Image (cartoon, one colour):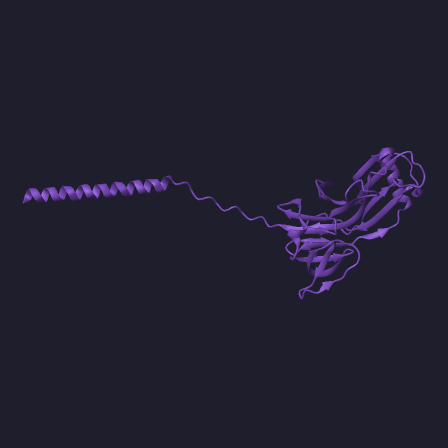
Length: 264
């Protein structure tokens, strides 16, 4: 009888030992399992529509092109001629069409800018001004020879508050590509005067052979994006002919100067 009990005890001990070994190996396998990956953070995409010309995404501080279809049937804050019009849904046909909450079509006339409701943008007011003797002197100094107002085929200047210091700043865009008289030099020039300092955005010399194919530049919008200390500037790039496709350029302020950060 004692011999049988001894055998039973041995069998039980072996079984317990085997069970403990199995548990140990299972725990070891669990310890060797790599940790689960953290889920990739979702980057919130924000949208900007500039007339019937540009459709842009903005995510993580960077711009990219967007398709019109990806922007339809979403809520947007809409500005018409840089004045707030309201919150609408947009659908694209040959142009952008606006619809209110009751699916009523909303008519507008002139330039349009729209941005998604999750996008923190302030559309700054810009005021047209005539090119003065002061600007003519600035233009002549930048391009390196004396220019007269009658030589300019594009003479555009606007004022705006680019930052919050209370001063009125100035943006100028001029060109003589389509001048009525022959010019010794053909050029495009866009510059900013902020707090008395001139910052050149575009300064192009155009060979006479290219004047009909070269673009010109118009000042379209001044936008404060995501509470930036200094507003960004939208300049539209257009053509006299079919030489190129109309697009927009955004200049953003960094390191005490404006830099072209994106264009389509």
